[in-house]
Image (cartoon, rainbow, N blue to C red):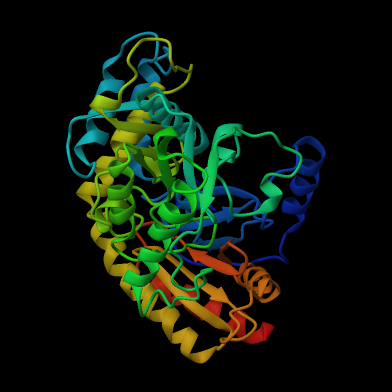
Length: 450
């Protein structure tokens, strides 16, 4: 295909992976350390919501580079902004020196944040680094050593954030000791929870059960509240299965945190920048967090993250935290352009509208296939959960994995989440006809694997 030609539809020309792709996959296994490869997509070009591989196959992408390319691929405004900055200068260590585009990027972020604008930004390079910074902000301000996290949460793989991550045991294998002092409690999962509560039918009871567990079984019995710096939560648990808690859950948890002098930290690495039909998911849950961790779509794939704190929680002196590449000039240019595009192209509104439509189509499949035990999500952050049977809700990981593989062979890129869920996170520019294409492939893939 010509370099400037828009990718507009699914095209599968070869067996998958194709011959060129297989060659690169073999080289990858030789030269790159083992990580988390899932599908044998060997990408070489992208535009809109489509990925072209090295063999000329074109896929409809419902992964967005793990919720990173929210504004779609090859966005012309983003390219121009980064190119313009590249011709001027691309690095000068923004933690040690000064330059305007870093200030502009911080101001642009603060202006789209929920609640008060009296906030400050510490730029990072990734989600896990953002959470590390957020942890240090909380410890520095409260002078307390301990934290509360949630079972099912995912906050990264470095040793501080890993202490909070509790979505898969394999994340922790071989890596003890991690940062001490993190205590996990159940998340308010409406579909599966240890309290035996149907959280869809009785969200207040589920919320009360989690709050009560923290107060009565953790703070009152073995973790002194005055030693806890903060509570770290995802608004919607991401890697843990796209778990959407009751709407007032985070508000209740934040009230409890403040009652005991703790800070409430929201990890919006995956939920931010329009993904849920709100600029930030915290808006849906009606809270203005004390600290927020960001990354992924903050700069549309150019490595960047941020920890944003209410100004009163800023570090009290220089040297408590820093880095080399945070606030990189190219990343700042990309972040400003990303925010501009989300706002000017009304992508949050489209995420909300198309999210309702996608949820509707997924629920139609749930009616058709009893193996889909649950459909859940906000905006364009949706998931289906495969079960062995509706009563037991036992995970059906094999069916989930087979459906993802079958969909890939038909030209649809999907990712798993949790034990048996598939996540649907297309770029926020997705259109109804593209959702229909994806649902047709998904329908056929489920049918052939039952």
